Length: 89
View (cartoon, one colour):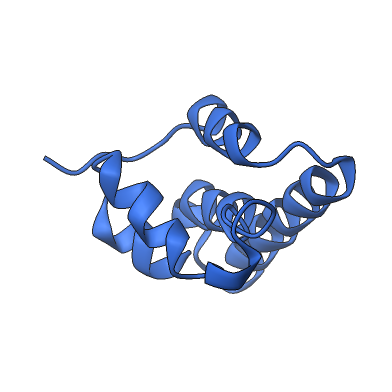
């Protein structure tokens, strides 16, 4: 069964793999930008989804810079997260 994440769960996942203040600020910034544009472009009903995508988009970068965009898929699949979310991230 695939799973989605609420904001607290997404933040907990992010902070499990990211500790640097810059990376955390960057993630929150992109989260806000994604939410803003989802609403601006008529996807307001999906704003939470797109905000989560923004928050997690660099999930693997701090610990796995050489496997960025690859390792994140493994991490998310290991947790049984929804493939739609994995693909978007």
